[in-house]
Image 1 (cartoon, helix red, strand yellow):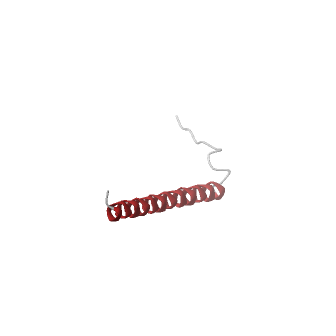
Image 2: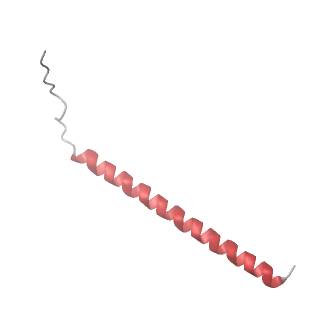
Image 3: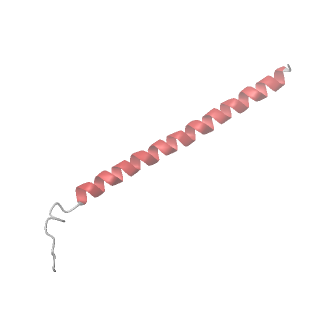
Length: 57
């Protein structure tokens, strides 16, 4: 095989791996942010909400 071709293939694989890693990091950061937002919403909830139910027949 041609050495230039092998170098090009190797370079393309490195670029592809770097792009995959960047997307994976973005997904992890997104999940982390969603978890933090959910925790903040849970903490902000009124603990007395839902204790009383008005029923009329």
